Each structure stands twice: as C-alpha cells, then as structure tokens.
Amino acid sequence: MSDDLVVTNSVRIPRHEIEVSFSASGGPGGQHANKAATRVELRLDLASSSAFSTAQRARVTERLGDEIRVVVDDERSQVRNRALAEERLVARLQSALHVQRSRRKTKPTRGSKERRLKAKKGRSEIKRQRQRPRRDD
Image (cartoon, rainbow, N blue to C red; front, side, top):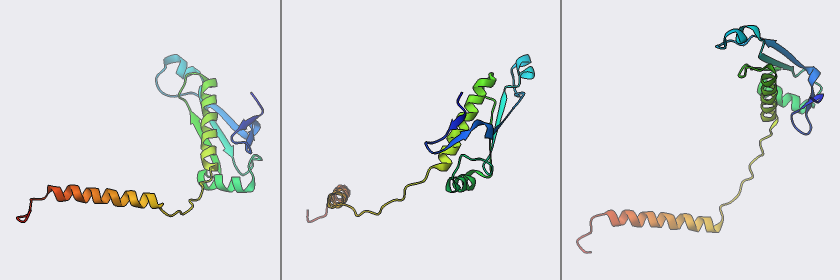
C-alpha cells in the first residue's frame, strides 16, 4: 500500500489523515460474524486535511459536510471491506470535486431548422390524410 489515497491528479490524501475503525458486522454469519471485526468505518476531517486547496475544500465541504464518513460491511473479509470503503470514499470525493462545465448558448443550424419544419409538414400531412374527404374532393 502506498502512503497516499489518490483521488484525482491534484488531490492525494495521506493515509494517516484517514481515521479507520473496525467493529463487528451485524447480520447472519454465525460465529464468524460474532467474533470477527470486519465492519470498516473511515472518517476524514476536511478541516484538518492537507490534501485539498482552499477552493477544493470549500467545494467538498459544501457538498458533503465537514466530515466524510464511509461505513462498509458488505464482505466477510476486513481487508476487502477496507478496500471497498476506500473506493467509496474516493468516488464520493471525486463526485464532490467535479466542476460542471457551463453550457455555451448556440443557435440552431439552418439544417436543423429545415429538418424540424419538414417533420412538422410531414406530421400535418399524415393528420390531414386521416380526415374524412370533403365533398369537393
């Protein structure tokens, strides 16, 4: 394992900043579930983390809050649960750090206008043909 948890190219969280705790996982599983501490909880305090710039920290705090908490007890293995928890933490941080690109306004092209009008004329012709014929036809 490396020292850092890689979120993006610019964000790498030192593992010592992530608080990890283990506890017994609930649910079925018999003696193994009662004895083994396979449930993993990761906590990351954004205020004390050195991995984020000021703007990144503000964006993540706005979207996720001051502390990020991830709990996983999907697998019977503590190691696998820890890996899943880290993956989920990274995914949440990546989505919080994502900046939505602003939309540039564009005009419809001449071809798209012509296709739209042609489709409208076609529909009106179909509907006109459904009508009863007039006496003069």
